[in-house]
Image (cartoon, rainbow, N blue to C red; front, side, top):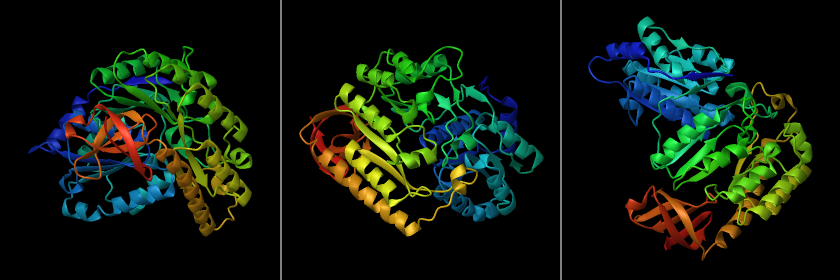
Length: 460
């Protein structure tokens, strides 16, 4: 794996300045999809600002519109094409407007071909590994006056020191690795984000220290599978070791991480979470299905028994630990028996939160070729049953929290005037009356009740 370092591209910045001689250009950047995409969007904004762009909040003001895309589900792709299609009139009104599509969708050849043929007003297309080269791409677009549509490419590299414009002043995303080696049969991620590449622990630690020094209160470590961190590095280190190092940094902060693959989640990791107060007592552990038969078809490499053993061990070691998960409904060939096993698992584990999806075939994945006889209506009915089960389980657990006094990170305005929202260690949200000056700080809140999944409280 190659390690690269971003440097300011003065030549490209000069080209951009000549193209906009009257005033600094404005960029509108919108990211779809996962937290990794959100973090990529923050870096895109940082790189654009480094070469002279300002930022704006709506497309009508923009000189550059850039959609940072997600390819995990079909609905996400349809949203992007719908948003790009809506820009045609803006381009007609302002031919100097630059429209770009980047990210995971742009890593797929058939998507790039569709953009090339059906969206002639799209000027710029590049994939997930192109953020550091964005200034040069823009300079080439302006110099040659032609569209810059990059064919999908993957670099076996990690680029450090990218400038970043973070969305928050108290919550931060911190990638520790990129790509994925799991090749779950339903998932497009390894094909669009490439194979696993771990950052050097020293680089992660330096960025982490900087975030803590600048007052960030919640830092979420990101990776397609954080539990496989360290593979391929010259020094022996795993994810649990990395967490130990980060927790030695002095400061008032908490650490979350995602996403955590069950096959690589170890008892060592659980022991570290139990021992380190900086680590949140909440684990996102995507199971995808409660059926061993489907887990094998998904290429997940664990059984439900192994999964529940890990859950049980965490409950023994970490008092009050809570869990969330991802579940796919309607994977090709899912039977009523398979689905019933998923419902049983939801009951047994008692997840605080579930992120649920009806299976979406992705071109290029093995599962997309499997026969899928289950009607959409039946999949939708199963989803409704799953949501009803989860609501019953989680709402009861949430209601039972009334009377506790908890520490929360205050995030912003609540639904009602004069209220704020705060996030608990277990990732639930509480609404309570408080002054706006508490936003971005920790507060002690007494829980007084709940409304569905939302906790209600008062300042303690």
